[in-house]
Figure 1 (cartoon, rainbow, N blue to C red):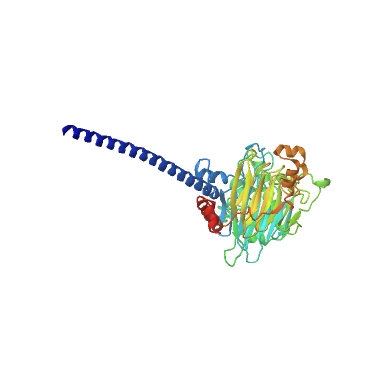
Figure 2: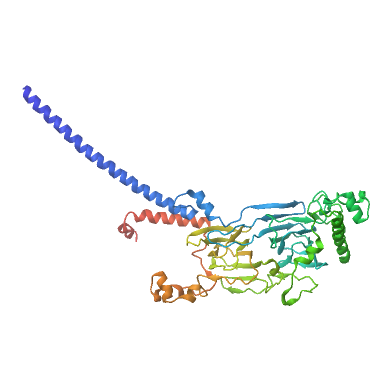
Amino acid sequence: MARRKGVVLLVLLMMCYAVAMVGGSDGGRGRREKEEEGGERGRREREEEEEEGEEEGYDERGGGGGRRREREEMFLMHEMKTVVRTDAGDMKVVKGFDFGGIGGAVSEKQIHLGFITMEPKSLFIPQYLDSNLIIFVRRGEAKVGSIYKEDFEEKKLKGGDVYRIGAGSAFYLRNTGEGQRLHIICSIDKPDGFGWGRFQSFFIGGGTNPMSVLSGFDTMTLATAFNVSTSEVRDILTRQRSGPIVFLSEDLHPPNIWAQFMRLKQHEKLQHLNRIVDLQEAATKEEEEEPTWLLTKLFKSVFGKEPNGEDNRRKAPDSYNLYDRKPDFGNNYGWSTAIDKSDYWPLGHSDVGLYLVNLTAGSMMAPHINPRATEYGIVLRGSGTVQVVFPNGTSAMKAKVSEGDVFWVPRYYPFCQIASRTAPFEFFGFSTSARKNRPQFLVGRSSILQSMKGPEFAATFGVSEEKLRRFVDAQQESLILPSASAAPPEDGEVKSERRRRRIERVVGRFGKGMIMDFD
């Protein structure tokens, strides 16, 4: 009996061991299957996150969204500094990129971008800069008074006008538009030989705000030079407290010295400015150690020999209107125009060019390069995307831009601009050369590929000549292309497209048979 019980107990122990072994084996296999299933699910989730990250500007190769966004905006210029602010207006400046060559780009001169806003009946008081100034009247009307070859000139400017003021040339700006603000965009560049880090204004008039350059001389020197009493000198040099941009309306604001200045006749204004020039010359003779610029010498040295040997030209150049110019290129998808020194010779003195582009909704300025200049662009209206490519063939930037945004593209770097689908995309800008830029397009009927297609070029892509020809000839348009599929979608469209792709991925996991059952 005891023996029988021992056998039964042994059998039960063996059965328990076998069950444990089977359970353990199944459990291990179950765990592995769950782990594999979890890994597959995790992999799919990571893929979805990466795809969403690509759509939202994240870097799927590591480094996080912050690094991706930072890289994607490397050619956007966000740092805008207010250099002048008064009740009558303000001036903001975006510092140009100062580089000695990045990623193979050659060294280019630095251009700052200025944005001036002036209220109705206001004046940007007389001053001169250590930099060349090219102004573009974005909106409104203005009068610019300046010294040209020792003569005083006044020019009326309207929207679209371009006008150059040389370094060292005294000038003022007045908003003459009836009841409307004046908006000006300008390039600011230093002439060769002046290597200071930032541009500097030298205000001819002023008081405690801003201080006149005359304030640097001692009172007795000024009294002697002007042939007035020292008390009169102190009175003149302490009255202005309104800032560099002042109101001229006596109805809303108390009379000031600049309202009186603007009422002078043209020859009287010249006498007033020349008196200051004479003062500085006299003061410099008395104080030889005083490091003062002589305005008259600057006026004479700013402009060199004119084109065609016309260096005796006395009259100041007129402005040039971008809006009145017929576009250099245009089709159903937009137009573009550029001006250089052959169109407006004063640009040659600054070695700066200008351009204006208007793209219809959803269209694209074909990928191209600028072989002669770096470009600075300002979005005037609408929105779109700017894409820039590194020399090694990787993406440098793909950023959305809208009205007021500033961007730049280094010389030689391939890039393109794409309008959003909702409205035209208009942008204006400056280039670092006054010569014809002659951009090289990489796509389209006027592209490099069209000119060079042949057996050699086909071999570089590893395809037949016939296949390359079909590929290149597929685009029938030049320069500005229809590109609704490439245009940046709106936020709602992005979400809708992302949702559609998710549904397709989910449905696809059940196999084609299930999809066919729904047809």
